[in-house]
Image (cartoon, rainbow, N blue to C red):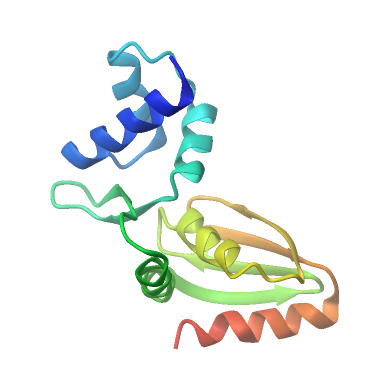
Length: 150
């Protein structure tokens, strides 16, 4: 199956079921004869810009932005503010601690800012690690990110 068909199916699945883990999404797709791995699902989630919101029956569920850029930006700011617990740094590394399941949500927001000083980032379940191009810029970027959570 092709990537577009698989990604369309992912959007259908998350709109009809509360899916809160990549493994669960992988299992749902495999039931529908999409032979996928968790790594593939991870890439699809990033491509589709999926994020987690509070679920009704589960603690979290995947959701997708379905509107224009301004509303996406505002929603991302709100999600970032609501999920971030702390922002700290050492040398040229910024560590953002989030509520469980929101490391990638915070990462999507930081990526959307397209800060030239940010070399890259890695998101985990409840942590976002950001590598900045210099120690001096790390302080600057940390302060900028903190503005979004007040």
